[in-house]
Length: 95
Image (tube, rainbow, N blue to C red):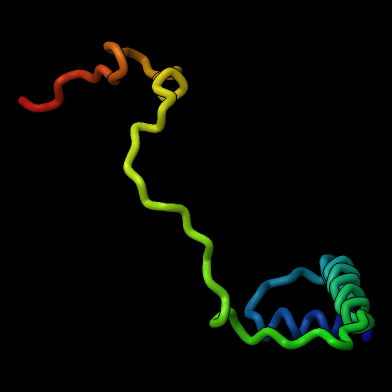
C-alpha cells in the first residue's frame, strides 16, 4: 500500500492536524515507510504460536516486603549538602 499526498491530506484532516502543502510529500514518505514495516510484520511466520489475549494466568514474581535501612548510608548521603552522622541535616522550617 502506498499513500499519495492527497491521501495524507485527508488523513491529516480526519486527525485534525494542520499540515502545510510543502510537508505533504515528506509526511507521505514517512507514513509509507511505517506501512512498509507493518507489511514486514505480516510476513512473520506465526504458525504454532498461541494468541495471547491478556495475562490472567500469569503471576508477577514479587520479592518479600521487608523493611530495612538499605545498608549503604554512605551512598545515600554522598550528595547531601549537610549531614550529621548517618542523617541529613536540614534547616528548621517550622516557625
